[in-house]
Amino acid sequence: MKSRKSEERIDRRLIAAVGVLLLVVALALGLLLVRGGGRDIGTGAQPVSAAELAAPVLTVSSAKLGQAYAADETAANKAYNGRRLSVTGVVQGIALDFTNEPVVSLDGASPSAHIQISLDKQAAAKAATLKSGMIVTFTCDKVALILDSPMLDDCEFAAG
Image (cartoon, rainbow, N blue to C red; front, top):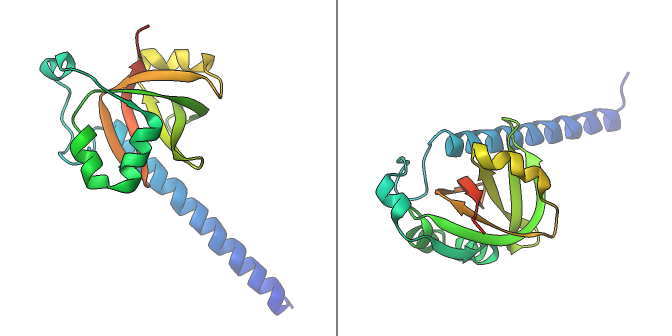
């Protein structure tokens, strides 16, 4: 017969496992929405037109972008949504997403809040050359807020 403490430990482990599973599913769905042309912050997903590509690129540091979203999501949407962004930051790490594509983490609003950079197909191969601590610049076409972290999509390494 199982003791009461043993049953409580099993219950806590089950709750923790379900919580982790829900977090993973939420992250996967968020990335799928961003990569699949889901909801962009503010206006809804629209393909980037030739006119938008020719428009001036707004330059911002990853830390400033993270701070803007942490302070006021609505104001940050007005400032950054629908614009091509040139984002410079310090590489915090590189991981593979659920589709096995590289995602680069740059410094954000705090040491635990990173900006996530999802690369276009041509830039993905170059991601392997990045190391933590490097300063890099990306040009990105989309921004979305996923689980309270800015996620930039369709990014490429900036020329230069």
